[in-house]
Amino acid sequence: MQLRRLLQCHSLGFILGCALFFTLSQNALFLYTAWSHITFDNIHSIIFAATMPVVIFCALNIIFSVLAIPFLRKPLIIFLLLGSTITNYFMFSYGTVIDGNSIQNLFEASWQEVIALLTPHIGLWLLLGIIPSLAVGWIQIHKTRPWWYMIGLHAANVMLSVVVILLVAALFYKDYVSLLRNNKSLVKMLTPTNFMTSTVKFAKYHYFSHNLPLVKIGEDAHLGPLISGQAKKTLLILVIGKNARAENFSLGGYPRETNPRLQQNNVVYFKNTRSCGTDSATSIPCMFSNMSRNNYNATLAAHQEGLMDILAHAGVNVLWRDNSGGCKGVCDRIPHIDMTKLQLPQYCDGDNCMDNVLLHKLGNYIDSLKSDSVIVLHQIGSYGPAYYRRSTAEFRQFLPTCDSNQIQGCTHAQLVNTYDNSLLYTDAMLGNTIALLQQYSGKFNTAMVYLADHGESLGENGIYLHGTPYLFAPSQQTHVPFLMWMSAGYQYNFGVDRQCLDNIAAQDSVSQDNLFHTMLGMLNVQTHEYQPQWDILQHCRKSDLILSAVL
Image 1 (cartoon, rainbow, N blue to C red):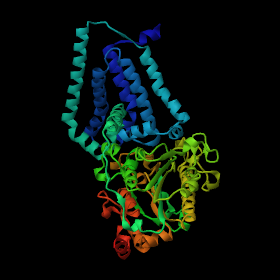
Image 2 (cartoon, rainbow, N blue to C red):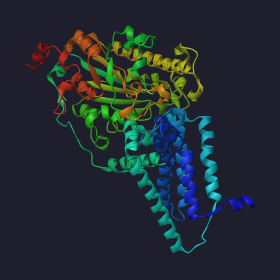
Image 3 (tube, helix red, strand yellow):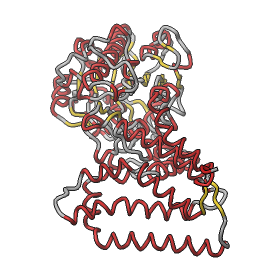
Image 4 (cartoon, rainbow, N blue to C red):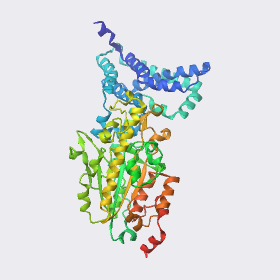
């Protein structure tokens, strides 16, 4: 009976209680982070810091007063509690911030990727949302006053909150502007507005842009005289890596030997390569589009043809093999295979498949090819936090390891060891891909390109995983490995000056913006969409060979 009395209130008390709980509980990380950027050296700074929970409380009070109407307020508050709890789990645990791309990645993640994120910790953390949600469900909201009185009371409550916010703005406007301008990620830590606005952004993108008519590009594409005049057909394999950071590639100077097979194959490694985004939902559509990072439009990319479509227009045989939960729309109009659906026991353990599954019976497919071809292999790569599942026992050379997806409980050394082992496996898989292409060098001019979608944070500055907004993302998430291997036949027949290419790879800065045009150039696809200045190989092709092909 006493508990029942405690769980009784009128509607205004309910709203004020919810606003207070969200301020002190769900926004604790925001307050802690914001206060850490303030130098408490005078009374002004102390009062400024003290206004922050007041402003958050007033803002939430306004939001809840407007949205929490009868019959909807309890379900709404419970939804916000559970959503905020999950959001806080990822922010507290991995140092990530929540935006539209984060929500998109979550909704588009495969079961393999989702399971990798599920830990006992997230179950315990959910209790922080479930328990207050149960309390919200049990609370009895009494109607003790006439409806017109309650409307007036709520209106006065909202107006008072607006006045308080305006008063704080008048006194501390410059302080807030300076803090938020210098620490842009702070706004994305405000809960529940972060995941609410991000979910709305995702819904707008997913349910509206996908219904827009398809914009066709590169319909004029055709194979040029250089490739058409070859005695052999050309076979190019493009491997899209996942969560691989250049900082840990020995090809780029990392002291550990994480790329022994690639080193033996004398690949061209581009040391200074930047990604288009810090998550797959951004980087993959961007790198396959005709747009650069600076003018990339996700909505347009979602309903516009890209690289794979143009190759198909040109008459190139194309195939996409996937081991990473989908191609983010770029392979929707071409032949594609989800290799995880085959459930091959030699590569797969339940929902987790090792990347060598991408090579399964690929030789049989290549044997059937009669035309110039591009095969895309989309890896699971070094997808976290379950890095230990991205390598087999043979490649667990760096010890001790973090054999858990609860990476916060591992030391930094264990985490790096486990991540580096995943790169060793990737190195071996790429080595196997090159070996396969070498077997067909008599039949085809062969080449391989490897480019990771984005990098990964391993606890540097308290940040884990990826997805940090690009503007303030650490280099570990934007500096990605990019390399090429070309058979002697390809280099000779396409007039590639290897020394020139090595010099560019060592000295120049490149990015995922170059992939679209470089791939078209490597296949000698001629179209108005091709911009030679973005083709990395353009300056390293022997002009006399190209001229003779044209003539």
